[in-house]
Image (cartoon, rainbow, N blue to C red; front, side, top):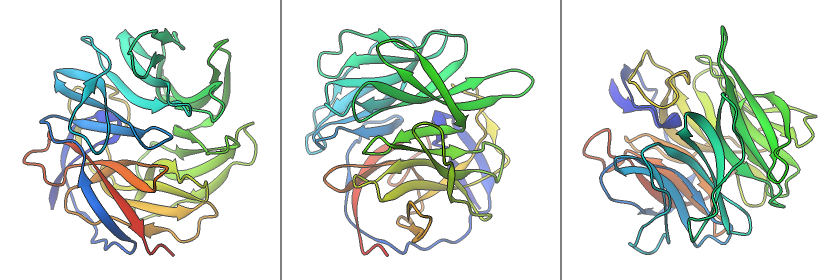
Length: 315
C-alpha cells in the first residue's frame, strides 16, 4: 500500500491504493532534477528550441508561472497575483506563453509575452472553466479543454482562433495537444474511473482513433514526440481519494504511477519509469529529453519537482 499524490490538474489527493508492480522496459539515461525549491513545481512545458522551461509553482503562495534555462539555476517569475496561473504552453516561435488562470473568477485562457511578461491578452471569458491550452504550429490557434458544469459535467476539446476568439468544438475529452505538423490532436478521453484512454483526432474533428486503452490502468495526459510518431503519457491507478479543496474539484482523483510511450498506431506501448515516486505530465523536448514532474526525491507529498531524462532502446 502506498500513499500517493495526484499530480493531475494540481489537485492534492491523499489515499491508500494497491499499486500493481510494473517494471520499466524502455531504458532511460541522463536523469536530472531541474527544480529544487520547496513547493509544488508542476506542469512543465519546453520551448521549441529546447532552451527554456516554463512551469507552474506555488513556491510563493498561489500558483504562478516561472521560466528558466534547464542547465541554469536562475528562475524568473513570469506572472504575479493572488490567483492561480496553470498549464503554461510555449508558442512555436518561443515568444508567447498561453496559460489558464482564475484571476477573474472561473479559469480562462490568457497569453503573455514570454520574456517581458507584458501584453497579457485574455482569449476566453465565459463562465465555464477553460484549461490546458496548447498552441498550433502556425501560432494562430489554441486547443484547450472546456469544462461545463450542471447536472452532468462535460469536458470538451475546443479550438480557438487567437485573433478573433472564434471557437470550434471538436469532441469530448481533456488535455489536448497539437501534433508537431498541426494536422492532428491527441487527448485523454474519459474522466470516469477506469475509462481513461488516449486518442487522436484530425484537426477538423474527423477520424477519432483510440491509441491506448488498458483495463489495468488509466491512460492520461498525452503529449507528442517531436517527430510525431509516438505519444508519451502517464499511467494511473484509480483510488478512493478524498479531494481536498482545490482548483478544479470535479476532475476525478487518479494516482499517477509511471510514464509510458506508445506509437501512434497503438503498438510498442512501453513503460519507461519505475521509481517509487509517481511521475506525471510528461512532455518531449526537441533535443530528445523528456520533462516531467515527480515526487521522487521528495521529503513530503507537497514537494513536487521537475526532472528530465532521455529514453533509449525503445521497441
